[in-house]
Length: 177
Image (cartoon, rainbow, N blue to C red; front, side, top):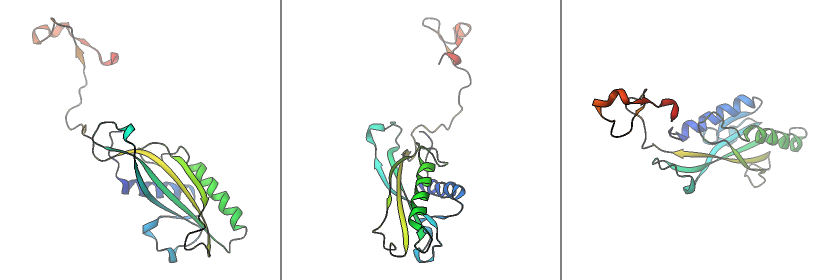
């Protein structure tokens, strides 16, 4: 993964992707919305952890990690059949996220948890489900950023028929690589 991933942009992209799929929910990044002012139903999203993945180091100078994403699906307790609708929505969100890159150039999502969040401070007024998933990503700049001209022709020859005096002996090997 040579492309640099901006984690702030990645979160914005996740929010937009999920908001497009779950239009009945107010979908926001958790720091962008005061909990008291949040209209329900809602999905709050946050990047919660960067877990090192040293064994997957591509040796590009980037930090290989699992990017943990958490979503809290929130429905008001006054909603009829709130528990049934909450688990149904949590299952739909988990199915949507499963193996999805959510518009970001990183690994496909692996869902780790879909569970009630009964210990949330707002649990008395809302039915809250927590979803957690991870994406493999290489964070930071790569050593191998191409800033020059990419060759369009690849030529090869065998010694001793090398050098400018032997240009006619070189073969185009673009399709052999």
